[in-house]
Structure formats: C-alpha cells, structure tokens
Image 1: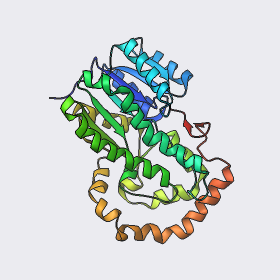
Image 2: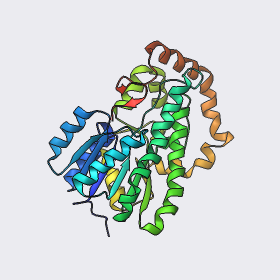
Image 3: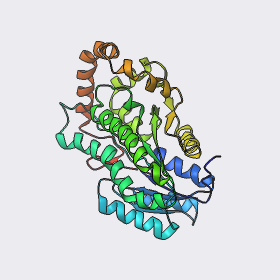
Image 4: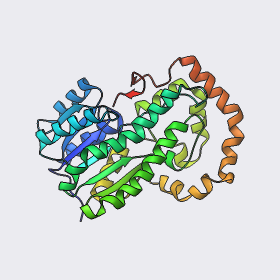
Length: 294
C-alpha cells in the first residue's frame, strides 16, 4: 500500500526556494501539512501564506542545533507532530580546494552533511512516534566526482552512507530512511555555477546521459513525493541516475578516472581562473559565507 501523505506533517529544510520550495508546494497539493524551514524568512512566510493556514514556517540554520531544535518545537506546537522529514538544505562552493579558504570548504561539509545529521537528531523522537520516514538529500555526486566539487562530492557521499547506517538503526522503531540522488536540477545553485563558469557549462554539455542532463524542479519534487509514497530506500532523479549508481565500481576505479584526468590539466586552471574573477566563493544567491537561500 502507498504511504499517503494527506494529513501528514512534512518538514522540509532548505524550503525557501528550489527543490525544497517546489516539494513543499506539491506536498501541500497532495494534502500534507508542511513545515518550511530555511534562512529566508520573507520567502518562507510568503510561501506558507500561499499554501494556506494549515502550514507553518520557521527560520532555521541546519548547522545550529539550537536553531533546529527551536524550529522543530515550533513545528510540533503548530502542527502536532512530524511524520516525514526531507533533509534538503545544501550548498556548493565555487572553486577548487587549493583556491578556496579552509572555512569555505568546511562550510559546505557542515551544511550538506552535518546539517543532515543535526536535522535527524532534532526530529528523530517525533518521527519515531509516528513510525515515519526520512528522505535525506544526497546527489549523483555520491556516485561520481568532478574537479571543482571536492567538498560537495565528499559531503553528498557522506549523506548516502550516513543514511545507510541510519536505516538499520531506525528499522526497529518503524522508521524508514531513503536517500535522494539527483543529477543536475534547474535551481539557483546550478544556475549560479553556470553563470560564474563557462568551463563548467561546457563540461556538462559534453557529458553523456544523466551526467550532463538538466531536470526541472517540478520533476525532481514529483520524484521525491513518489519515493516517499513508497518509502523507498533510493530515489533517483532522473531514473537513469540509478545506472550510474550501479556502475560505481567502474566510475571510482582507475578506468573511470581516465576521461576526467584527460581533461583536468586544462579544465581545472580554467575553472580556477573563472571563479577567481567573480570574487565569490559561493553563488550569487547564497547568503553570507555559505548560508544558502533555502
């Protein structure tokens, strides 16, 4: 039987824009009561208002446990509990490790991986009460790697493996855990990288299948909700990302390294120069040092 989210409380981090916002809208359309968490109070308040009075929002930094705990307390107070958590908040820095300040690289890890673990810790008692479901947002980047994305790839691979272990820990409590693995989604985050680096955009055009394809936020959100309905352990967007997952023994072998290494000696200096010219370590739609808009 499908897991019907109608009437259930769905908490989404990074809900102010992009995948989080669209998933909130589609979940609300299916009858869920949504808690939107993020770093842009004006956008969150507007979206929640558009969704209706049965929804709520809270300003929340997923790297700050007190902030998360307060947002969860607010959600439970407003909506009565939590059934589903979509740990979606994420960022990507612009630049290689050699060209990026250490704090920038660490910030990506903190938001993308530690933020997921803090979100789970803040919500697990409530989700267990309702034998609910977690969807932890990883990426295609857990199955492959590109230069200029070391912190992002490392953090998303960490989310996948954290989810694998968490799944075993929560099984006896009746809680299921899935990880979401998306290719390139047409969000502000991806558009920011393209705007700052023509080399990055050219590289995507040359990559085969899901490695270079761009999916819409609407399709991504629909896939998330379909995965939640089946309480799936993996959600792939597009579905062909599943093929890349199956090919990990090759993509992470010396053989898989060859085509990337063949381009890296010219591609990496170009990336570094283009990102250096922008004067930014994060995209134009990020807030402060890696604090994402949603």
